[in-house]
Amino acid sequence: MTVLDAAPTAPAPPEKAPDRARSARRPRPDQLALAAVLAGAAALYSIGLARSGWGNAFYAGAAQAGSSSWSAWFYGASDAPGSVTVDKPPAALWVMGLSARVFGVSPWSVLLPQAAMGVLAVALLAATVRRAVGPWPGVLAGLLLALTPVATLMFRYDNPDALLTLLCVLAAWAVGRALADGRTRWLVLAGAVVGLAFLTKSLQAFLVLPGLAGAYLVAGPPRSPRRLLQLVAAGAALLVSAGWWIAVVRLVPRADRPWVGGTTDDDPLSLALGYNGLGRLSGDESSGGGGVHRSSSSIWRLVGSGGDEAGWLLPVAVLALVTLLVLTARAGRTDRVRGAALLWGGWLLVTAGVLSVMKGIEHSYYAVQLAPAVAALVALGGAELWRAGRRRLLAAGLAVAVATAGATAALHWHHPAPSAVLVAVLVVLLVVALVGLRRGRRRAFLVPAVLALCLGPSLWSVSTAAGQHQSSNVYADPPPVTAAGWHVGRPDGAGVTAAAADLVRTGGAGFTWAAATVGHHGADLQLATGQPVMDIGGFSGQDPTTTLPQFQDDVAQHRIHYYVAGTGGGPDSVRILHWVRAHGTKVDVGDTEMYDLSGLAARG
Image (cartoon, rainbow, N blue to C red; front, side, top):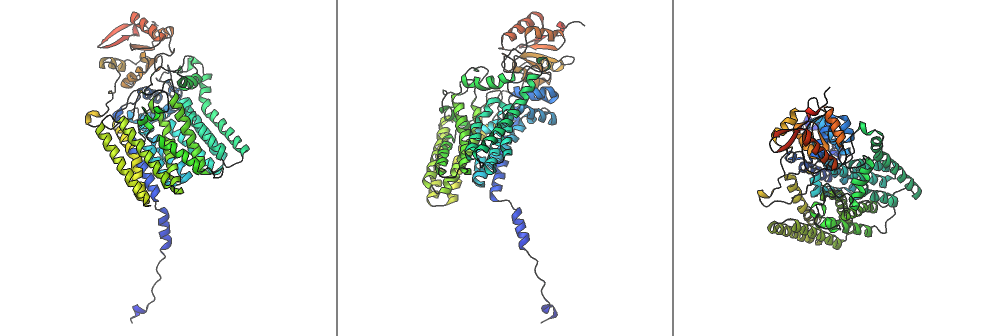
């Protein structure tokens, strides 16, 4: 034996502690899956955004105005000088206006915030469901929301619905935290968030309130008196959050602010409770667009003519809600799963009921507010059935889900060949999943089951993302059969001749408004020229925003350069048009009827 052989061997360095540290830093499979869902949602909502141009030009024009005028930004005015606000409260415009101010006015700066809101909504929904039943159901809920066609539509479009959806999911997340620990601060946060949602889209935000408040009232950890006091505190936070902007607008004199669009009395409460509220439910507000459903006012609207928007899994969600209530019937009062079922079930039933019976202005994309509740209930119900070992119920639920997806595809995909192919694929996935379930193989069931749930909506969502979506009526698009089937929206433009747009573009110097026209068409002209344009009569041209004497005074004070004749409008708009035709100087700009009013300005 040599000296080297006899030398004592140095002790090996410990390896277990570093291994444990590395293991603690290593993401779990569910975290990787959620990251993949969020990355996919970001891609789905953001790739090719510019193909839709300004999307809804009426709101894009207001974002442009807000990027150059803080007053227009605060009030949500359609033009920088502030003649009239848009027909919604301004919260969504605050986000878009800030984005346009920071990054410049462009379709990307206006539309990208909605895509970010979509990703955040998916992440919050996943976190809310995870808190109730675990990480993998949370991933499934996020995936189902991300792939709902109407969600893809709204998160690629500059309507207020994207922010409304995000805020409502955030409120549900806060109530979920309150259901877990009973702290008042979460309920106050939820109330404040719903109040901000009210400043986004008025009374539509309150559709989620029965579910949120009812779930905590039944399943909140504190005793009954404290739960009631906590809900009162949440209500106070809601009133402050929803009411401060309305109070400011009502206190500021009319001469110092824009007219409140969508009203006949210039009152923001009328806008919130009437035009954007009860009037749409009763039918008192039935002009200005909407009415896009083919079916009558009934629940069939959501699974019939509007089913391809958000109704793919609506029957499954209802079945899941019933199953959850049955499985948790004997659970303790504060059971988290039952609390979650009450929260999302109340959200779903109230929202679906109201959307089904609306008689006034309505659009099929309003169903985006159903999407979080549907996704959450399907994930919650599936998770609880799996844990309860109720294989027959699980199989029945999956069968209903696949049947619903197949029926929706067959109903809305107007080409029989692709419909048949999709239905056949769904049947194969169903058979594979059921065989795997019978043999007790989890992966053999879960993978085809999730694919069956997601296949139809994902095709619609990808097709929707590939299309163009402009104007005030937009839809989730069915997949095309040929390239000719792709939806092609109108190109961006002002709706006037190039010569007319050029005059407006160069005619703003020395004037408050480079031009005036009737209704929301002024937004197209404003975006095309970069000059402020007065929208007489608000969105529809019917609001009494500007009387003939007021218009004459603006012309005399050298505030309006050109008048571009449009269509429609209320009595004031008609009187203004007749006066302009009688006194203005007609400009030869091709097919556009345009008048130069600068010669009518009072001589100083």
